[in-house]
Image (tube, rainbow, N blue to C red; front, side, top):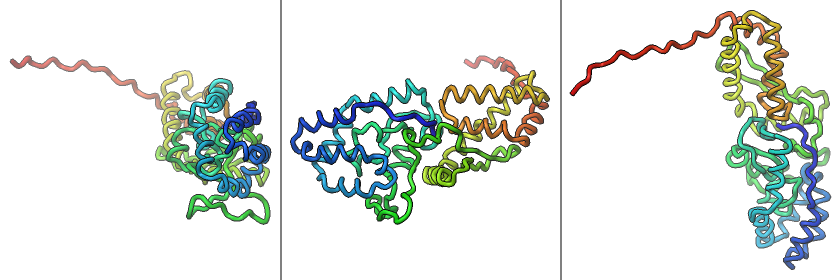
Amino acid sequence: MPNYLGIPRWGDYSRLREFCKKDSSLAVHHPAFRLGYKKYWNACRDPFDEWAFAQTLGEATAKKLRDRYKSGDELPRFIKYRLNTLQGLTACPYCGLQKNITTDHYLPKQHFPQYAVFSLNLVPACTDCQMNGAKGEWFPGASKKKGERPKRRPKRGSLERLLHPYFDSFLSEQVLQIEFFPAEMLLEIEIFPIVRDKQVRRLVSFHINQMNVQNAAAATVRAYWSSLISRIQEKSELRDDREAIERFLKDELRRVYMECKSANSIEYIFYSSVINSAAKLDFLIEMSRCPQKKPVNRKMPKGRLIR
């Protein structure tokens, strides 16, 4: 999950007006589209009304809106430039792993075509989460059986939802922690929220479970841990020196934050977990006493030339 990115500044309403003026079939829906833009954040938490409205558009109108996004519109390029260049974001907001980041529709354009070219509905996401991951065409309230029809509006509270990098400002702070046993190389990891607010903790827990973050991150955490042990063993200045190892870990934590711009990427919470765990530090000190042997390059014996 990324840090809080803030709301992108894009002329959604003026672009919508220009788009609808060019097509009379869309101009009829312009007032409803504009109102839907204003109610977008409510739709993210309870999309029943907006989903019902999308069913009235008709397939031809819905296709025009989806095609607008695919037609090389400036909006997707603007979002990707803002996220990748200006923000320097490299961690996926869904799984928290450093992968190839593109743009994804928070409310799927397949079910909510009215938001296909709405800047606030385009969020950064890795290709794995978009195409074959747990996100897919999921949206708050979607039925697991049919995958399209939302449940009835809840009587109390709002439906469970994924975290949104433009609106969930609590993401500017670290909300996740990771735990694993340092002596086990086949790590059984646990990722959990560390926030006090019950509602926020519930949202973070739902996101972790819905996106299967724990299983997706397991292999990466193993690689981080194995690599960290090797690097500490290679550095003679860290041997049996707790303070030096702690400084090294803090430098790594700062480096990761500068690269990911996130306090909730998997790599960041990994180093945070190691720094704040006496057991993990003790294990690294013990491993530093056993420096890694450098491989010996032995020359192969010359063989006889066979004619």
